[in-house]
Length: 399
Image (tube, rainbow, N blue to C red):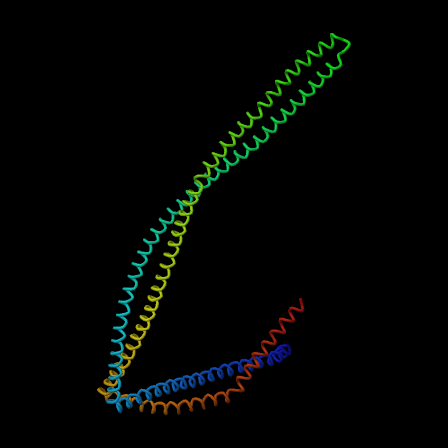
């Protein structure tokens, strides 16, 4: 072998030794972990089985104690539970009877309520129809009264207008008389004046005199007509006033009977409204009271149903206790079989308890014996992870 080969062999030998050491750590560590896991599983399974067996023993002990207690008190149990069952049955029968009576009464009350609703509905429709008719009459009478009042108002307005027209007409006629008298007086004065002082111009005097005479004649006629118009206008306007007053009296004549008739119709409508409202209130009150009675009855029925249910449950519980006592008393071999099975379970529990102790000791021994190998495995894995992490970091930094 050359010196180069010797040098290469010398460099590779430490690497091979490290590799074999690491492999040895892995193999030994994995084997230790497997051995530790197997010991732990065996111990855990045995302890679980021991706990299950303990539960079974406790259950069978309770059952055996129960069966022996019932067997020891068999006569007393049967007598007591028979009395309890019979009492519960009697209570159930009484509750059944009361429940049936309540249901029958409820059915009757509900039928009464239905009949009451039907009758009240008929009464309400009848009274509502009467109310509508009364209100129609009231509206008609009110409208008739309004028409009569409008007629009276129109007649009074006509009378007021006739009185005003009379006053204005008579005043105008009197003013016309005064105006005519003043005009005639003026003409007469002028006429007298020219007679006392005749004009030097006889032709002009004569003309003016004739003119004044004609004017005086016309003014006299105008005054006559004006004086004649005063009583005529007074009479005519008074006749119009009298006619208007008669029209007012004619319009007033049906007012009082109409008002009296309206008061009677309105009172009848009020009575119809009161009757309708009272009937509705009374119906609602009676129906509400009956519904309340029905509600109380339904509550009482539920109380009896609950009493029936509870009595039946007590009767069933008493019968179950009797059946159980009879079954245990009639099958003593089952009690003995249970006792033998319990003894067998207790013996098995003692053996299993020893096995659990042995497995616990074995698990402890394996844990102690493999502690070094498991620690080396953990350190080796940790070292590998550290080396890999450093390599990754170096590569990342080198970039």
